[in-house]
Image (cartoon, rainbow, N blue to C red):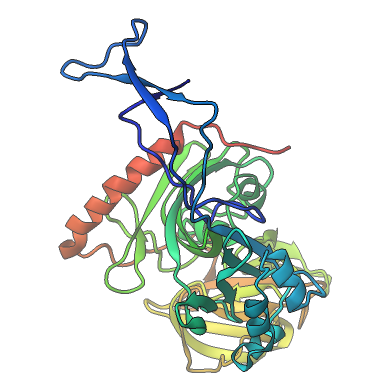
Length: 436
């Protein structure tokens, strides 16, 4: 006897679930069902104005369950040393004509040169292993070769990959480091870097992080046939640093968009707080004993210790005033910015490609790489901030803000922000999972 509530609906099993498993996509018809309506005194009463009916379905023991039109989906990852014949066998393709077509068709010869380890190939077959379709992603990941069974036989086509964009909600808590916390929460490193960049005007991620700081994120991920393949952008973020809450909301203004707080104030500062994404301060803005000259001298900048080759960012929009070798600075870049500001970057191992005097750069552009050229005892970046030629401490600088949200975009921004703030609040009270 099987009980069921007649208001429930049958649910289909998505084909894309799982890896290396068989799934049914067609269900046969149950036969010889006896239906008897019965009253259930112990059943909970429905809300006023609604009636609940419970039915008992009597399945005769001799009534077989038949399945028709079964379709099976299987996905396999290419492994090192794979041949196409081995891959087809693991995909469950037992169709001799299809195998000959795939293995020997001139149209598919390119696939044999693209058996890259880790690539996911999928096939849909019948119960007997007859091929219905084969999906093979090509190099670059933006196209897929599809072999499909049609009434007139097998056909081959190349088409763009159709992505599904989903919004992911994740939260985490700082225990040891930002990347440690995002790894524990299952957040991609690309999203962690985005978060640090978004809040870089408010939080110094080199010095300000505290154990117990919490963050909540809403970000985009692109999926292909059920697998995450591309990381998108952060749509909303909340970071609680030392008890103070910072929020950011993305708004596309017809271009690539920008980030604002809930009131519409732009989070993009005229200057980033640091030219390196992640590093540590090894020498501050002060008098110090010079390690090479062996004398006390004024240190008119900040030294950031980082491995050789670490990317260096322009901290603001500007023009390259100098790019070359300059005495103890070694490989050196000087940028001029609006308002009489200058930023200087020294001891680079090399400059970014195309960086020359007179070039315009945007905030966040890569201009060079950490090294130890000039008077340096180890790889690091010496960074200076100058106002009308006078060096000042960049860590104590009251950084000017950039242009706020245009008034004509406020209504659209407030509608987006209200929805995404609700998503952040949904996770705010949850306890992040941590793996010690």
